Structure formats: C-alpha cells, structure tokens
Image (cartoon, rainbow, N blue to C red; front, side):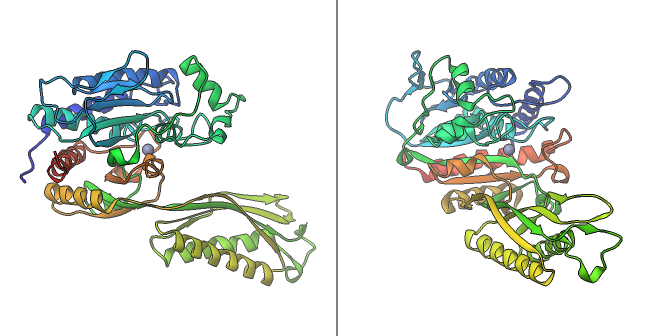
Length: 436
Ligand SMILES: [Zn+2]
C-alpha cells in the first residue's frame, strides 16, 4: 500500500501545537493543570478542531475532551453521532467497535508543548486527512484529550484516564492539594453537581484498542537516527525508601576503624544499584534522593534515607533485581555494622502492548521510514490505565536531546510528518483488517 504525503496536514499539526502551547494558566510559560481555566480554554480550542474534522464533541464528568467519529463517515456526510443535551453522552446509530486514540491535555509546570498535546492533536489531523481523501473507516473512532495525567495539581496521576476507564477510586477522590482541597471538591465545582465516579465509557468487547502517540522523552530514537519507534511495553515500577542506620560521632576523634558511617554504606549501595542495572539492560535503577542525618561537616553520618526507583518491562525481572539489591544492601550493612530497612511506597506492574496492534503499527512504521525500532517506555502514560479496558499500543516520536517536561522540549516538523503518515497508514491498515 503506497504511503501518501501528508505535508499540508503536518503543517497544520505544527501550527496547532504552537497555538495550544500558548493556552496556559501562567503568563510567560506553559502550565495547564486539572480542570483549570486554561484546561477549559484548551478543551474549547481542541474541541473546535475536532468538529472541523467531523467529530461529535463532548466533555465527560472528569473533564476529558472526547471527539467521536462514527463508522463509515465520509467527507461531507454528517457524522451520525449526536450530543445528548441532557448530558447522557452520544447516541450511536448502530453497534460498532470503537478505536480509541489520544493522550493528555494537561501539562507539568513550565512545560513543553509536545508532551501529551501531540497524542491528541495528531489523530484529529489524521482523521481530517482521511476525510479529505474520502476514506471512511469501518469502525468508530474516539479521540481522547485526557484532563489529567501529570499529577501536578494533586499528587496522584492519571485522574482523567481513570475517570474514562471507570478506574477512579475513593482514594483518588480523597487526594488533596497543598491547600487541602480534594479531587472530589474540584470535580463537584467543575460539574456543579455531586460527583459519582463514572463507569467505564465503553465495555471492553466494544473496543478495538487504544493507540497513543507520544514524544519519546528519552534519547534512544535520536541515537538510532529514527523519527519514530513502536513501544513494546511500558515498564513496571517499584519505588521505596532504604534506610541505613549507623552511629553518629565526632569527625575528629573517632578512629576510622571504629566508625559505623551510614553514608559510606549508602554510597556503596548507590554504586551497587548502578552496576547491577548497567549489567541487566533494560533494567534501570535510580537513587534520586538522599537524606543524611545529622548532616553536619564535623559529624559522622548516623542515618541515611535513600530513595530507590527500579523499572523493567518484565515484572519478574524487576522483582528479581529488587531482591538482589536488597540482599546487597544487607550485605553492605553487615560488613559495615549498620542496620538497614526497606519501605516500599509504589509498585506498578508492567504493561505489555497488544501484539496485534503493535505488529500493525510496525508495518506502518516500516512503510513510512523503512526501519522500525521496538522501544520500552520507562515513563508511565495514559495507556497504562487504558490497558485495564482494552489492548494498547504506542508510537514514540523522537524529541531533541530526549528532553521533556521543559520549555525547550522539541520535536522536529519532519518527525511529526513521519508520525502523522504512520498513524494515517495504520488507520487504513486497521480498516482493511476489520470487518466492515
Ligand atoms: Zn505525557
């Protein structure tokens, strides 16, 4: 199947990314947080672009922007999806499977304009491109702009996709921001009514899958000189605190042989974690925070608390690596006459991407840029939550220096053009593979 250029559509995508990048809660820098005024403006702007592409638009109870295109809609023909004025959602003309495409519209503070926004705007432009070519898809499509992924306003992330997937729990609603305002209160203020956690927007059997396009947020594609790559799995993650306890003492009068220096033990552990992960790719292990007590230049450190973050695309390998690290920590502690304690704080299983959707996406990548590259996502994405509802697949787009969560975050227009061609090609392949 020949791949056609999407040059004018990719220029439109670049312009829209720039325009959406100016919709911010803060002057002079990009910040859009859950249900903020800028998020409402972003929903209005992106919703307008969805309508232009022929989608029926609504915002759900969790603030997610949803654009729906029914199956077999051609250019010029009306989209049979209608908005129920009472807020009951979209009426469908007949049962049909739905493909979900999307990402998040919220950002971190002082963000770049590609993280999240790309995965919402690209499918809108891709559907517009197909409409212009007169191509109708034999399945319905929903483009999703999730209201919260970054965990900025509240410490918990994925509030938008959890709402859409029916995964919002009481614990999520009880989360409070720094001023003591809860997620539930913010949602009730948004909806002007009592908030009840919604059920999943679809039954799993009615869905074809969820496909998310996202900047890589890492350096692999840049190093391999490729515009895009296909994600095989999203790494599972364990986080926790490791405490080494020794004996604080005078830095001048305590002989070296008699010391029980907690920081020296902790330093040995940091190097152990680095060495273990270096030898077990794609394992990554990071000590990102160290608290030393009492923390004075003339006192031997008596206690050190380390953060540890361990990630691997296979849960068994992640758990095995964690065990090796904890055994190593105990050995270091024994030799140095320290006490050691481990307190886990987070444990998320890995998400394997759908073999079928991923294989199709790889065919499209090969058709557009000749070579496909399989990548593991070390960062979490909305696809993690959506995987509870439907099979997921992800396309990564190269970003300069692997930089994200920063105003200098950048994806080249040529790479966005490749990503757009891939998604257009993927939709056509999926249409051919689906019964009409
Ligand atoms: Zn993101």
